[in-house]
Length: 249
Image (cartoon, rainbow, N blue to C red; front, side, top):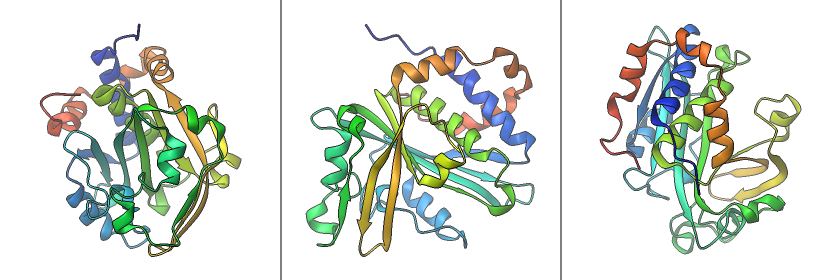
């Protein structure tokens, strides 16, 4: 029997990372409208175009099946963004979803270019099935890099995805450089997770697959240093969660 998610424990976990962002001068907020997300990210001069996986014109996200973060500095200028969405892979697996291009496009027959390709050689991708939360499109402004923002955002997305969806797996993709520099937790990662070409998007990637199981997330949350919670601001948590849907799935 699956363990039940303890909502208070997850909220405390999220609170720690929100407080860590505040100490760095970053105020995080959460959104659910991906038309708005594309508008927000589209005005960031140094960010590459958001991949089709998070663009409603190519891959619409149903209400309650996606969210995004934006963080701003004291001048209300954007410092960091990241997005997440839920896939139902009950009748397939992550590798097949990638290679069919349905990971990127709601209807590949309509939107994919004839030269579009995705190859997934990561063995574990074929065991990733059920409810799968994908975390991606992370961008950090250059003057905030090297300060732990990816770790903060990873904590935020893990906590929010667990609270909203209790997914069977979470997954993300990043290049070899992130493994070499240990930017992310490498306890579960494999090379050749996504060898991708999207011709019309100008995208050519060769990324590692990073993933966690539901039990991994619950262990992280339950084993988190409880003393760190005292550093968080309950007011900031209330603000952060003000826009959440009234019913968490």
